[in-house]
Length: 365
Image 1 (tube, rainbow, N blue to C red):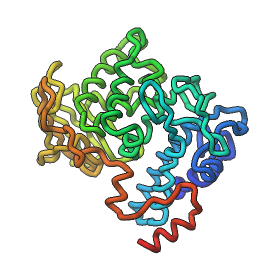
Image 2 (cartoon, rainbow, N blue to C red):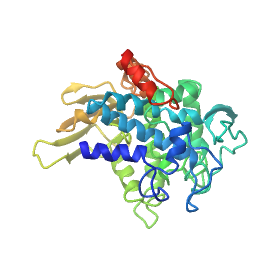
Image 3 (tube, one colour):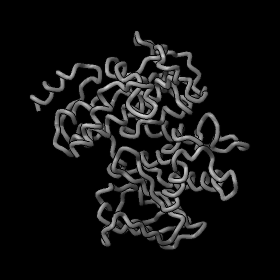
Image 4 (cartoon, rainbow, N blue to C red):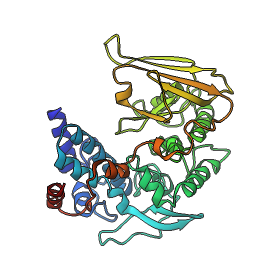
């Protein structure tokens, strides 16, 4: 643990010697200084900028480090990286576009935003957004969806934005356009975001349609480069009915394609995860009731610790959307960073204030 933790800190604190493609964080010094990576800075070795997407990814990485620090009882590091994981907010701007307000936009060194940026523009990695648009990346704060939903105008407006994202799909290129593309990683988590507003059933319907229309057994069986198994793993997880939120210990419960799934988690004979879907059929795709390890489970998600040493997830399926399970209850929503303020009692400090501020915060708590 100690050696691995040192590696995490090096990644978060030391600039890479090369272009930061295979190791380290490119433009890390700017990220630490400003709380975001500014646009129009000299590139290193001519590689892509991706300032906005890197800022969002670095913030998510910082949150993952904070979780490890918390588990290792490194309180100062926990507070530091937890606060730094809010850096994605530094690129949020209340720009209005197609009836929605608030998007991730490029920002200059002087703090001004590029408010003229085309929300729907993308071109590989040679823009502020890597393999995606501002529209797509403005859904990406996996560790604090509660805050992102708030900035997007609240649950109702967020649901409308999600609906537009998927309902606007080009019929000739389904799920492969400027609103959403399953062909690259920026869109992998987005179909699960209905969980954060108590509409898990919408994720179920959507995910099954994506699997049906974009994956197959012919020579074009996957919608994009497999990227070391990323595309295949997206399909496999959804086929067994769960999906992980990368960098966290959270799994979303969606809808299995199999009545019985058995997964061996380790060499131990007891470390078996079993997923049972009762009454499952091509039409019975919605969860009516769930039980985890023998206990009735009202959440649409669970933690790795719930199944890490083995477990049993039982799902009762129906053709009708449940009126009670996983519907509109704030207490059952997946966790967000914003919730930790209540849980820990520790206040946030600005992501661009000196680390000395963290010392003062800890002294007061």
